[in-house]
Image (cartoon, rainbow, N blue to C red; front, side, top):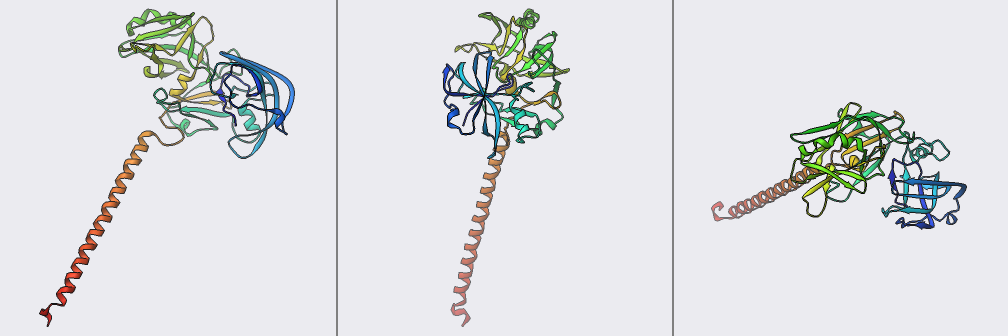
Length: 360
């Protein structure tokens, strides 16, 4: 069994080979010689991530996923993995169509009959910053996206055709009494493998003159810029305009405490001199996001606080109703027993009276 990171910003599924060199914190390794069905293609692979890289050889082998049925899959076996520790044994690349024999993961699932569509989505609980991150990846369509409040954007070819990208029409800040908008438009990649939101400096340059309206300023850290605000002030939410629709990340999700003093908060947006724009995991915590290659679009709907089951409110309601039902049943039983005892006592009294001398 392998625990693999889910990355919409890359296209290769890989696991680490036994004896893999590097700094990647891996606990489960793949040993090709221990599998009678594994076969090396002798084709090398190499991939560069934002915070690391890996390289190795492509293999074919039987894989079991979401069922008891095995199917043959094409994947990378890394002999070198230079990564920061993440607690995963490899990566599942979930990009769009891949133009070589190495199909992306969802394409391989469809090719082998595990799913009937090139659609998947990610959904998290809304309290991810207050407890352990809880979420699910759904393969196939999800009922959430049949609702009227669903928003969407068409896919564009931005930098590389394998990326899930839309056109970002504007980015802005909105507080209770102030608003600031940068109307610069460009492509943006939706990348589950990125922690933060990364935007070019031109957005911050447009907004900088109005940051004081929110009690905020800028922070330069090793060439990257951030928005820093007074934690007790009216620090803003983040607004992203896509396909003429506003998607908001509430301020409690878009900002975190800067240090242990908890006096200042820092935004989840990193502004860089690079022209590339990325929307990372913070966004997916707030929005259940569907990646649909068949219809060439992304869909978004605010998370409802439940994952593949009942919301916390509904669960509490059910528990309260269950307790009330138990108490009601207990009361009915008690009432019945009490009346039965009373009737038995009356019957006993009638019997005693029947034997009284009165009837003689």
